[in-house]
Structure formats: structure tokens, C-alpha cells
Image (tube, rainbow, N blue to C red; front, side):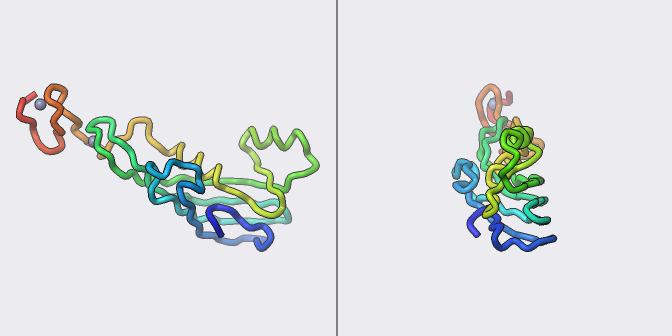
Length: 155
Ligand SMILES: [Zn+2]
Ligand SMILES: [Zn+2]
């Protein structure tokens, strides 16, 4: 399997489990910000053409600390829930259901979860990332990194 694409031709009915990985490119995320890609542990359940995916996706984001401007890696974990049915027959309604985020539609051959995974990861990113909970930041006067001790200016 490449990335987070479930092959519906071989997906058994009932419950199954899937461990998968995806690169930043497959997730359409900037590789510089998500160098390690992502790993997913998924519980799948199939009834006919209806597929429910529940799981957890884990990654690490390369972020710049808003206080000290240092780059660091923040572990990110997000829950994933996707309910997908086969497209066809419901016409416009399908678009509405997809837009509402309630439901996804597949073509009967494969189920691509990259978009859902990307959105779930991005939602977990903090608005103002800190390299550590109590990052002391930079001295407002001399710009020294106060995580490395008090600065010379004493400010
Ligand atoms: Zn910091
Ligand atoms: Zn200073």
C-alpha cells in the first residue's frame, strides 16, 4: 500500500486493522515542516460498500518557537474518523454530505484518506508554538536566548 489509500478490492467485510505510513508529499504537506511523514493505526469496519475508519495518526511537526525563534520538533497526534460509502445515485446530495464533513464517497476501488489525515494533523498544530512549556524567550533588550542563562545586559 502506498500512503493512506485503502484498497477496497481486498478489504474484507467486518472489522480489520491497518497500520500505515504516509510521507509529507503524499499528505500534501510541506516536507520541510513534516520531515518524518506520518504513521496511522486504523480500525476499519466494512458493511457492503460502507466503510468506517477510526484511528489515530501520529507525526512530528518542525516548528519555530514564538518566544525564542528556535526550531524544534513537536509530536502531533490526531484522531481520525471517516465514514465512506460508494458514490452513485445520490447526485447533488453527495456533494452536500461531503461538504458538511459527515461523509465521504469512494469509487468502489479505493478509499483515499490523505485529505482527512492532513486536516486532522493541521488542526492539532498550536497557534503559538513553544519549544518547551516554560521557554524563557529572548531578552527584549539584547536579544540573548534566556534559556541559556541570564544575559549580560541584565535586562
Ligand atoms: Zn523557545
Ligand atoms: Zn539582555
